[in-house]
Image 1 (cartoon, rainbow, N blue to C red):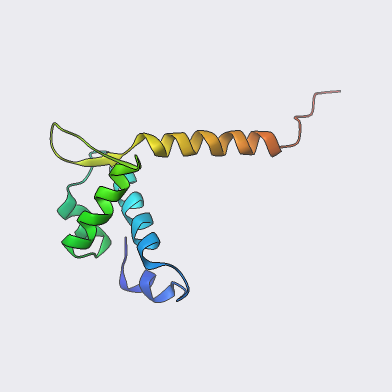
Image 2 (cartoon, rainbow, N blue to C red):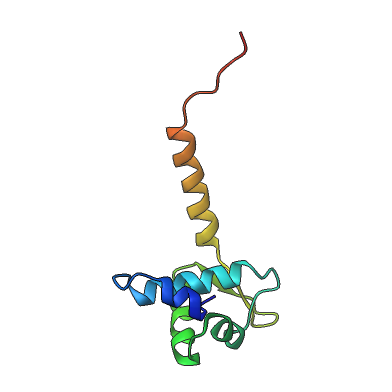
Length: 101
């Protein structure tokens, strides 16, 4: 996900490790087959050691999950949990639906 244009447009005050982790989540999330660590590193423009450390951290936190069958990484259960929490927040702050009348 990190390309020359994206890197150039990022404000300098952002935390690099967090933007890299977000890039990894976006790369994995956009590929339904999952990705190998090497594919993640290549797509995100990261060296393999950095990618490996971020992938394992995201996996430990439940944001990524390694499929035992093929070793590919897919989005983990923590992503669905955060999405459900966000949906509940939106529902709680949405104005009540109008009824016809």
